[in-house]
Image 1 (cartoon, rainbow, N blue to C red):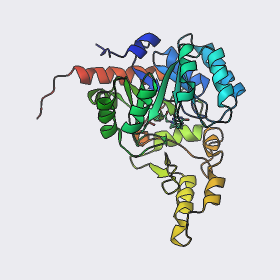
Image 2 (cartoon, rainbow, N blue to C red):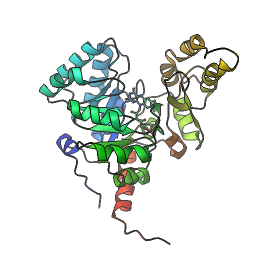
Image 3 (cartoon, rainbow, N blue to C red):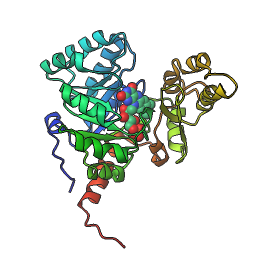
Length: 321
Ligand SMILES: Cc1cc2nc3c(=O)[nH]c(=O)nc-3n(C[C@H](O)[C@H](O)[C@H](O)COP(=O)(O)O)c2cc1C
């Protein structure tokens, strides 16, 4: 029997599984997010630096697929952020997830419209700060994750955040099946978020080259770029990633990394991966969990397989050999 978690937010949203599909700029389209919510998880549209019209289009695409609640992940530094929030409120979106930045200036307004706000945090300090400001839950995201990352691993971050705050904690980073989900629950999380696993789903609209690369990736298939630029991002080891790291390391011969070359390579690089499948200039953002993703399957199967396996493990009586 599937384990039921005591998470008031998931209950309010009517979710079958305590599983969120993390917002992914360009990759988290309305089709993916709508399909995840329809199948019983919580789908989140990734909006990056999109202007408000693009955000509205993807919200409406998700609505065509499901009547169930879904979320929108916003980039608080976006210069379109005010208009993006206007669209989110007008369209009656139920959940806002935030990556980098402080959602506090918008919190009261979002809450007045009944919107649940869930920031992603990479540290205990930020989790405590977000709780104090009044957010509804946090996603504690470890550095195994795809995309922009902090430095702590999921294994150490999650229990420390759980101890530090009284709001629900959702674990992210390195989870791609029921074993990881069960482990996260044992660490005290009241739900899990996956990104990389959902890239390789039937409903994901990323370029076929990107899907193939996730499925082919091995355990050591990802690298962290931006280490020296203070902009850490986990991506698949493509020619672009290798060039990026090479540009960073020219400080051996020059006083600092080649920031111009890096900027040129980075601008629009996620779009070039997701839309064009271009390995020489695209950033194929994906987490260490890519090594565990061996197939492309429907999101309904990802959700049900993950939670059935997690429930079996959590129901098991453990004994050592
Ligand atoms: C291609 C890609 C793009 C992402 N973009 C965002 C983003 O725009 N905002 C955000 O908060 N997180 C972003 N993430 C992180 C995911 O929401 C999620 O937390 C993460 O993928 C979980 O770790 P996993 O990849 O190990 O499952 C991105 C991840 C990937 C793989």
